[in-house]
Amino acid sequence: MTNDNEKRTTHFGFTDIPEDEKAGKVHGIFTNVASKYDIMNDVMSGGIHRVWKDAMMDWLAPRDGQRLLDVAGGTGDVAFRFLKRAPGATATVCDLTEGMLIEGRKRAEAEALADSLDWIVGDAMALPFEDATFDRYTISFGIRNVTRVDEALSEAFRVLKPGGRLMVLEFSQLPNAAMQKAYDLYSFNVIPKMGQVIAGDSASYQYLVESIRKFPDQDTFADMIRTAGFEQVKYRNLTMGVAALHSGWKI
Ligand SMILES: C[S@@+](CC[C@H](N)C(=O)[O-])C[C@H]1O[C@@H](n2cnc3c(N)ncnc32)[C@H](O)[C@@H]1O
Image (tube, rainbow, N blue to C red; front, side, top):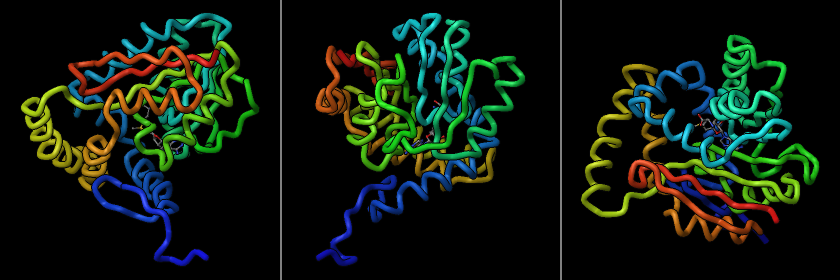
């Protein structure tokens, strides 16, 4: 028999919470930040997230005719880049938070990309798509927010066609303690304050930096991708491991 004391817990930043509360809290955070999300991304990273997303496209090598699913796609950054490199491709952006998708749809109209894009509210752990639907699956700065990462990876495997490819862009771990310390000083002291000044919200950005520290290191995450069924799993560090790209194929 299960009672409240036996409820499964998970981390929400550095706090442990019941598993079934995490998605609601994550949704609340991204609803709060949606209208300021793009500008905050540029300010906090000094624009480097753009370089990382371009590196993702270099490795992914989009082609006309491909069907992309960008999960936790938010305001559409990754899908836009994909379509700019392969104007004959199509993309579906799926995200838990409708407010993020609404911002993205406005950007798509401004950039005349709306005809090649769908925007779907959905959870990475239970994707609202048939098996073997997509050629490419991307998730950028999204997977560390998902309650059960293994379920999201299994869903990625399920919705990809045989021959399809997964690519994950996520914050990662630096290779030595001194660099990690310098990075922690910046992220724990500066980012929540910037969030307060620019978006009037330090708590959401405190969660952001805590969630980065809780995410598994590069090799552990690569093993999780293999466990979900992917083959030829490889990763590349970006900016010495501040972020990393992971790639895997459904053979
Ligand atoms: C940091 S944003 C990343 C947005 C975009 N991919 C980018 O790289 O700029 C994280 C996004 O993940 C979404 N998200 C969090 N948990 C999710 C889940 N379980 N399923 C789908 N989307 C999720 C949030 O709503 C948010 O839009």
